Each structure stands twice: as C-alpha cells, then as structure tokens.
Image (tube, rainbow, N blue to C red; front, side, top):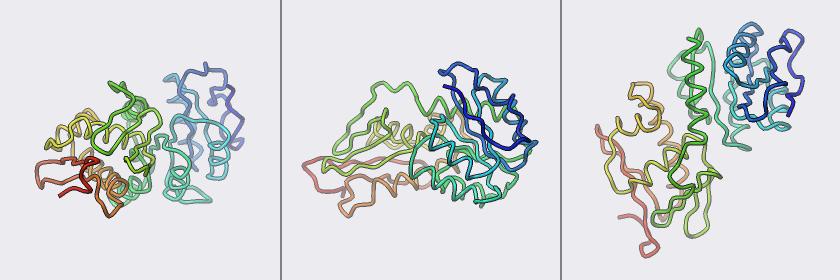
Length: 257
C-alpha cells in the first residue's frame, strides 16, 4: 500500500517511505516544526518504518481516516488544533498507540497528554535511541503475544484482538493498547495483590517514577470504564504504598462487597 503524498513542500517526500513493504509498521507523524518533522521521519524511516509526516491537524485527521496507521506521533502545539484535543478525536475512532512528542515538558502537560488518551509522552529535545525504543515497545504492546486472545474471569471477558472488554450483561467498552495489556495482566491475576513494581515491569519492562506516573493515569482510565455502573461488577482496588488488586463479580453475585 503506497503512502499518500501529504504535508507541505517543506516536508521532503523522500522521508515518506511509500515504497517500503506493506508488512512494515506505518507511522503517522504530526509536527508544526518542519525541521523536527524531517528529523523524526528520517529516524523512523532509517529504522525500517513506513512514515507519513504531516504539518497540521487537518491533514493528520484526513490521513488518519483514509489510511490505517499503526502508531501516531503527535506534537502538542499544532497551528490549527491543540494536540490534546486531536488525540481525543483519534480516541473516539481508534485505540491505536499515540505518543506525544513535544517541547512542553511540564508535569501537567504530560498528565494531560495521558489523560487525553496518549500512551506515552516524550519531551524535546529527545534522545533518538530512546524515542525509537519507545516506538518499538509500544508497537509490541499493541499486539503482544498473549497466551490466548481471550481471557474471562467472572462476569468480564477481554478480547485482546479487538481491544474490547464485555460484561455478562452485554455492556462493552473499547480499550487502548496499553489498557488492553494492563487489563489482561490484572485479569490473569485477579484477586491477587500486585505491586506497583511488578506491574510496571510487566507493562513497560522498567520500574521508574515515569512509568509509575503512567500506570496511575492508565489505572484511572480503566477504572472509569469498568467501574462506571452502580453495580460495581468490577473494581480495581488501590493498596496504598503497595499496588493494585482487581476484583471481579461472578454471575451469582450482583456486585463486589
């Protein structure tokens, strides 16, 4: 599948790897800084990815809707729309991985990025090997080698291939790749007290202040999805200073005590 010509004349078409094999991951990049855009596109192309660089949100959305990118790299500051709002629009249509790449390095910006649906947040200036490692890790997590594509515990069934979870009463919710991986890990160990360290190492392969902050945000979003009903058929408990525990009701119990 050829990558469509997108972006302005400032974006060198040589960086759009249209000729690459279709099985290679296809990454959509949005950045208003043309030099940063060229650099990121060059790095990803050199690492074997097909890339599509765009300079504004309108072009990104048009490309996103007409192609099927495997991952989006998104700047927060775009000329026609805030990157956080753009990520929310993407999330309404897809659960593909989104990494923010921005010069805005304040903690509140990182939290807003994750709360808007982003899976990771990288600040500029960035270390190229670090960015490439994060891209590769997130792509792996978007299609991790689950023991089984489906896991069921109590009233909750998770379909990893569709990135969806469903309760026995038919209620269903969509998940991002990281949420899918996280919920699978929790469901496979439902009822167990899992330490922050163990979860971070299982999801991100490292336990750092950054991964713990990301874990907290993703747990928050998972809770909003699975604890939204008054019956509380599923709950993620926080054991202060220790970790989390997933409790799921069965069809024989109307809720969790």
